[in-house]
Length: 449
Image 1 (cartoon, rainbow, N blue to C red):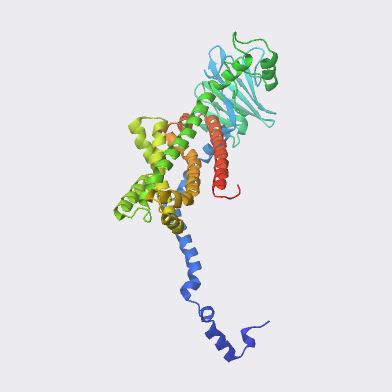
Image 2: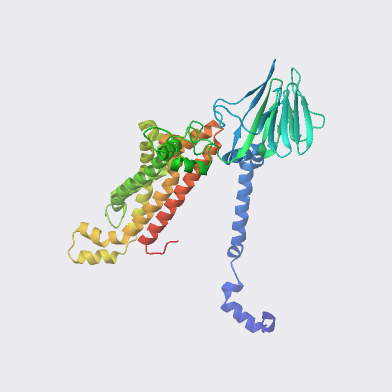
């Protein structure tokens, strides 16, 4: 191997002089990458303490996050046992997912009717009787005695118990949990899936499995006079009181229309305005400056702020959402279009001009063919992006599924509905993303990716 040690002093000096930039590298350039990395790390450390990240993490309710995620993929039934002078009374919420007259097989009464058993899983159950709740988990039994004033923590209590303000809570994990008071025992029993997703308790199809529903539609007795069983099934599905599919689909369609119409109007208006803003098209510095400042103003105000403004002006609804998208995208597309126009090939313009074409014809045949595919591609991208953005601005009153999503989140109990709408939004975004990518690739002459 040839090294500098094998070379004579004269040869080394000659090489150093010939390749001075290699042997005498500027110290600033040499340590620039390291300085950039160090500055970035210092910035991140400063942000870490400036935003008090340790305190944020320590105050976070991670248990709630787990419950919210569980509620996305499961549902709960909530029987309640009240202690009366004459014994126990079993109650269910007024709008229980189990129907108007619940009788689940996981709740059984004793022969005498003075005790109830609630099953959570194999070897996991409770027995409720007046003055005592027997909890069995994994074969181990815990007895919670109930006095007139409070529920008492059992002597062999584990970490699954929690005692506070005279109440005793016990968790069976994902299967559910219970709360024992001196007056009642509340049960939350959790199940996988979405309850009554297809048919609510008011439907004739409620409680049927898929095969039974198909059989009823195909060969069952007529449910409603003058209607086929299929039309009844479709009606009951769309107007499911718990899931409101029809309303969700309408709101989702509103979101799609908001994104499409807002982007369409913005693209149509930004197209001619961009010609005024382009310095090589419109030879007026004043017109160029004013139009570019207009674009800056429209796009500097966030779409969410425009949505709030138009919601106050026009009231809640999709018109406010369309206007918000229209204003924001007019500014953004106008800027992009004008920059594209300023970078066109002037040779085509000069060629058309040399044929005696009018100024309008010069732009029509010398400029538009160059930029039209790019303009359409950018508009398609913003249409795809606005399909997502329309969900956010809908949450502030601009209509669409965003408002429906916010309503479900505000209740704090309908997280499975939130999960359902999020999945629908993901499907729509996925579909429109692929459509947009395909159309853009056709416009710019590339293969779809």
